Each structure stands twice: as structure tokens, then as C-alpha cells.
Image 1 (cartoon, rainbow, N blue to C red):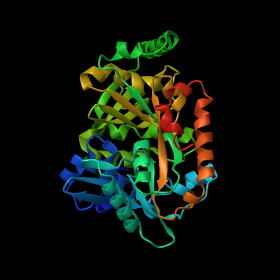
Image 2 (image 1 turned 90 degrees about the vertical axis):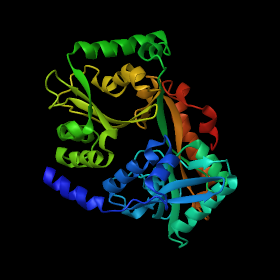
Image 3 (image 1 turned 135 degrees about the vertical axis):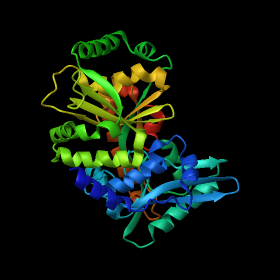
Length: 390
């Protein structure tokens, strides 16, 4: 396995990631604390997909704005950034299937990067440059995926006419500066008791959680990674999943961390893991895997994902845990705020500009599912962002 992974890493490392003419230091200053826009993460996206990455940058004497870009056609079939897959599921008109993806191709976070003063004109020029970079041929689109509401609003003010499509709910767990006890106090009494019981059950099970560099243990994580994917219908092998982990080590180095759940003295055979990244005051949870044949129903999942991070928060100065999409109800029960993520077609003649009523109807249905669930209804934050394009 290691030999084939090394060959693959060498091949993919030759694929270029550029930053619109900026060097990596300039780009990372612009990315700031948006980890999924940093040069290291974008290089990992290139290695993972084998698709060259670049950026579109607009600057003047008063400031700069930019976004990463890459060709959609090079992304693998498993990519969740294929815009027409989402539109099919929503019952909305398809866009051209070829074109320019605006944003990273992993991480489910796209931000318009800015420095200097607020300039609507600069953003308008960015939209124009993106359309030029996307190409003017009739068969191509230029689409941003997993945008924040702020960026959608400002891009539409800059001349984008397409109605934005709700893609997902992004979970963010706030952590008080004081840590565990203060965090528990943010919950109703019954929920506090449930969380304490979940942690107590895990603690008494004898299982342990070790926080390690991914570089030190990636070769042990293939089985739980493949087991979780198989549970959700994905056919894979431990060796296949370890190739991606090795890429993360090669590109991201010590930025890649992992919480490993294991029996005492047996960290080489983990029951489960959670790969995460630390960025400013955030923990960004990226990849979770559990060996389903070895789980004992001892509350392993949320202890590994969240409770261990909340316990460590004061020492790590963590104020937010980014839990991402999926299983939003369970995350909301543990204090997550759910923020909307959007698709926005920047193409000048987008079919979605002619289907605004249908897009808004989809967005209302999407929102209503969360409003109908008492676990998530109170977690939508801020509510006006969710309702803005309904």
C-alpha cells in the first residue's frame, strides 16, 4: 500500500496550484482565518482531485478581493461539488455541466477573500473577471458552491442575477472561554444531564482518546475509515482511504491532527478517529471513522468528535468547533448553530435567473424540514439569513 500511495502522491504533486499571480504568503494573508481557503488546503484539494487550481484576483490601491477556482471537469465522480447533482435532487433546471468551480473543491466552505476598504465596484470587477475566466462559450458555467449568506448577498449586489440555491446547513458549536462547565450551562437541565451521562458512560468504559499528529498514526486509521463509509453504502478499502490520509500528511504536515479512540495500550488498533485542523480559535472537524464491528454503544461518537475538544478548549483557546454538514439534529442537540450554505451561478445568462420562483420554493422546502424538527428549529442562525431567498 505505501508504495502505491507514494507513487500516486508524486504524480499528483506535479499538478499545479496557483494563486492568481500572488505568492503563497500574500495569498495566506488574504485568506486570514478561513482555513479552507489557505494555500495549504488548496494544494491538498489539488492533490486529492488531481485537478489544477488557480485563483481570480482583483486589486487596486485601496484593497483586494479574490476567490480560488478550478475546472469542474477534472473533479472525480465522488465529488459533492458537481452542481447539477444538487439541482437534480432539488428538481431545478440544470446548468451547463462544464465550467469553472468557484471555491475550494473540498471542505464545504467558500469565502470571497477581501482586504482593504469595502468596495462594491471591486466585487463587480471580480464577477466580471470570473465570467471571463469561466469562458464565454455557450456550453460553460461559472458556479460558486457552499457560499455564506454574506457573500451571496454581496455578489448579487455586484450584478449576479441568478437566485441562490440552498445546499446545506453548516453546524458551528460555540465554546465559552471557560470551557466544559460553562458550555454545559448553556443547555437546559435535561440536556446537561444527558451529555454528562454520555461522557460518564464513555469514561467508565475504559476507552481512551489520544490527540496525535496525523503523521504519527495515519497508517492505523484505514479500517475504521472504510467501515464508516461502508455503513453508508460506499464501497472502498482501508488501503484506498489511507492514500488520502497520506496526502493530508504530505501537504498539510503538522496542521493535520487526529483524536484517536482506542483501548488502553492499543492505539495501533483504534476503535475510531476524528481528523481535525486547528485554525485561529477554531477546531475544524474533517473526517470521522469508526470500526463498526468493535463499537460497544459506549457513546464513542460524540465523545471523540466534541466532548474531548470542549474539555481541551481553554488550553487550546478554542471558541468554535466547526462540525460541518450532515446529522445536523444530533449536532444541534449539542449546541450547534446551523448556518445556511448556498450555490450561486455567476454565469451572465444563468437558467436559474429565469427560475427564481422554483428556486425559492425549493429553498422554502429545505428550510421547512429544519423548522418542522424541534431539534433543529431553534438552532437556525441567524433566522433571517435562512429566509432571505425563500
